[in-house]
Image 1 (cartoon, rainbow, N blue to C red):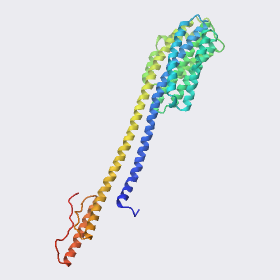
Image 2 (cartoon, rainbow, N blue to C red):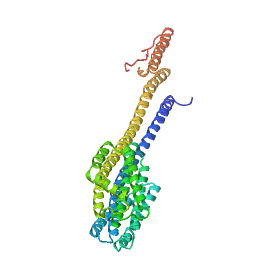
Image 3 (tube, rainbow, N blue to C red):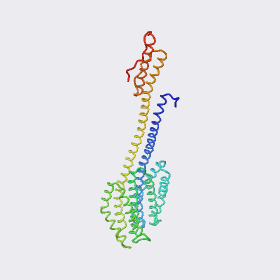
Image 4 (cartoon, rainbow, N blue to C red):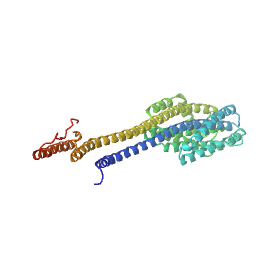
Length: 398
């Protein structure tokens, strides 16, 4: 490094650590920029999750309506079934469109699970024709819709696992388990409608319904651990409603007898639907929290990302300006001394030497001026003065 000029050496010594620091700042900014992409993913997750929840609600209703229709051998719910299918199709199309528009944004494992749900839903028309023609047993019909709903829940589970924001993951988990509990409630509605419609339990049906009730409660326990306080409050208020109490009474009758229940399947379906509609209100509130939470998380992440980018830019500009100022404060005074020395060596009048820069440079300038005066005083003592004596002028600039 002895061959380097002082300017180059100073630039190297100052810029190297600054470049390292700036590189670190740029790295942080890049990571935050990637986080901004993850924030957009959170927003997409929330929109798709809400569509899945809405579709689940409609397929659950269609499952229960179809169960009553089949159990009554087509005597009940024919018009209601047609109306319900139209409602299901409206959300089903929205689900297909959302999945297609976001296909390139999700990881491969999420797309694979979503494709399973899409495939199951595409088979729904064939099943509907069998139900309308009474060519399928209620147990088979319920199995099909339950499989469809399970695929939708698996899709939502894949989305929740893909959630990177810690503050949103708890609410998303509560949403997933609430929908799982609601799915068990919907399946209980369909199974019990079949029992009330036929007047007796099928093989294993009593244990199945009891298991559904137990599983629903287990999922609700998980939901209550993760749900926001406002959602919990809404859930508790709706759980105290008369429809929920009436369903509980019907469940006690159902589980305590082998037959002769004295409950019409349509009455059961209507009462249970009131309870599920109350759950849907809680679901909508929870979905709002998921959507708003995703938006807030995205805003936070974008703000951090841009903050890191601007920090890197400011730090880079500051490092450049500080480096130039440091080099200027040292190199310019030394360059003035060098020019003055060259002028003296050439027997020319030197320019004013700038008295500026760091203390050491100022001390060197003062020492140089003293040296010049001393040399000239020696010369003046040994030789007669001829003309005007040159002298180094000290500039007052600081």
